[in-house]
Length: 480
Image 1 (cartoon, rainbow, N blue to C red):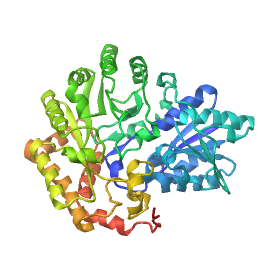
Image 2: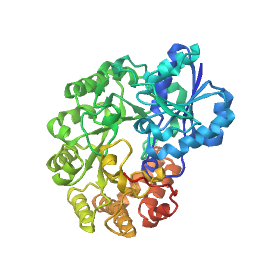
Image 3: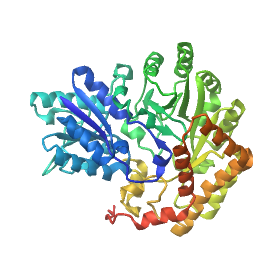
Image 4: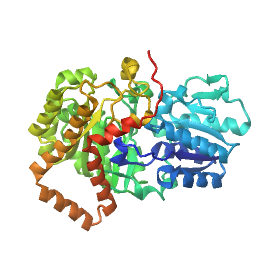
């Protein structure tokens, strides 16, 4: 069979997509499962090709099945826009949507332009689906689907048991080779994604990862990690594991084998501060694999705040880990959760914390209840909007204690404050000099610099956020 796998186009949202633009790794994994079985696959990234250009590529390919990825709640409208557009061009094709958001809330995707929703790991569901379609069989016998019918959705049961990750085929990276130079995080480009583990044993109330994976946690062996790294051309690799180094011995062995292989990359990883505090030697070992930067979801600056989001960590660990990374000369980015219920004193507390610790490389996410999370269940009845484009972690969809204009004034001040701390600690002249050097050596392009300045400008203007609320889609709010 011929299968087209589609990442829908952007629609000008803020949030993470200003800072990161990464490959559709999930689609590559699905294609990796299909191609060894003789199926022909095409991956189309409409974020690059656009809706019309991407649709033309899919139409030329003339697939039997079109699978779309909807990982984030903000992608819902654009996903259905793409489906409806493609359905007009390919009325005989079977249309399937999958990804984290679709799996969290399949009922939202009960649109009849879609034939089915995949609920679970795409590689486990797509192969039996395609094989059943080839034989003309009954799709109600394919587990892991929600089938859309005029009378409602029909569940085919739980997805297949999750396999050992070493048994999974490697991602079909060759299918995105023409797009690869376009992917980045901040100014690191080109960038590849790599997954060495799936799931998370922790249960933060704002996060859906552990629910999607049903509290399971699976890891690839160090040998498999090295094998996959050999297939990655990009010099920058972002490891998508939600918590890296959960298994300390595996972390040590991975570093040992990567170093022995001669592979050197700039690795960006995500981990917890309590792991850094207990096992700082891991940081030193991974520095020997090329270079290293770490994303830290600190979330809150005190224990009461951490407890409120069920983080299972302490403020003392956060502070100690930052000092360890500074001593080791490892770059890091801190992220904090801004609660719409905050008063001015709470914003001041966070700014003071950044001052004390010099964490100028910080980001700020507005507490956002995503469908499928514990937080959603707690606050659904209080939502101020169901315009899914606003669920981008930089807009509030919950009532604010401060007037909305004042909330966004304080929120944008956080971004400006972090930049001012950078200038104070590193010097404005030094900051500009380093940027100029990066331009001169080709590490970044002028277009990327302009994008960065545009992002800084957007994130520092309260009116940007307020205007988006005024443009919000007038969708009804359910009362629970």
